[in-house]
Image (cartoon, rainbow, N blue to C red; front, top):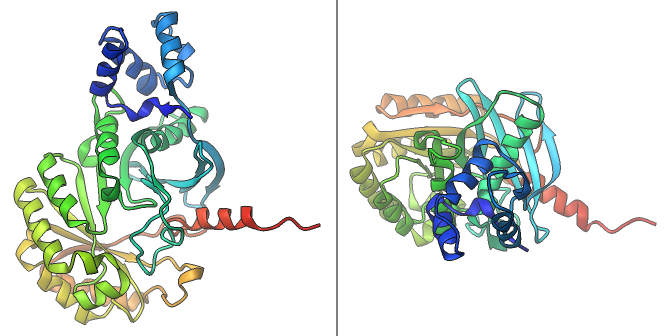
Length: 357
């Protein structure tokens, strides 16, 4: 299996060309073909020599993801199931908004974080995605637009798919530099959001990167007792340590941070939890935004149900009264296995089902 050419930042590609006896400027030519003209064969790169094309063909692949399933929702959301070169399956989701087209990308095959409500963690992590496999998810969605001859582009990215992005930190950083580069896709840093369940050491590292890329924290509960019950990671990085790392991030970046809060009926959706969450964010409320997320039910986690509209409204009102900026996420793709990882899980079960005679 060849590595994806998309996995190299432009600086890494320049170094690679020099190491292989080629001129450094070839990297910018290749990037133009990949990200501006969006060719899918090295042979289409007309201003490269035959020797250079042969070198690229022997070293890299442009396409390493095969589309296995594509589901389109009535609201325009599209969920793609991609098969990797090793046969593993991942999900990528295109969401349409008034402000543009946002793609939710996956960073790992499976997930080891073990949140008790999450469909993407039903199958344990088998490996990290390399940077090229993450970038190619964006390129495949852009190819969907190009094939339909639509003058549309991927304008926003959320790194919130299957896996924990900060558990695949190096590949995540390379991905961010590739998609943000002005010589390529030029997706603005402020149009990209990375979500983490709270790997504290990596939050410090991320703060030191100096990126303008947005950060979201999956908080889901305001106390150690409740958060540890629904998120195993809290046992390693309790709320106090998480908040210390967030304070460091805010001091370094002075950028607003989003707190994701999934609403689980009669578990974490009481006004009592809202008031505790407001207290937790009290000294950082000017740079905090709480995103209340209606729960997407998962067959394997039938102990959880979606909070009632009344409970969500009361929780929202309680936060607002305490001066916390918040909103309720509009549900998209509800008719196409909306929960992250759900489509992948169902496809794997389908493939494992024995044939009937």
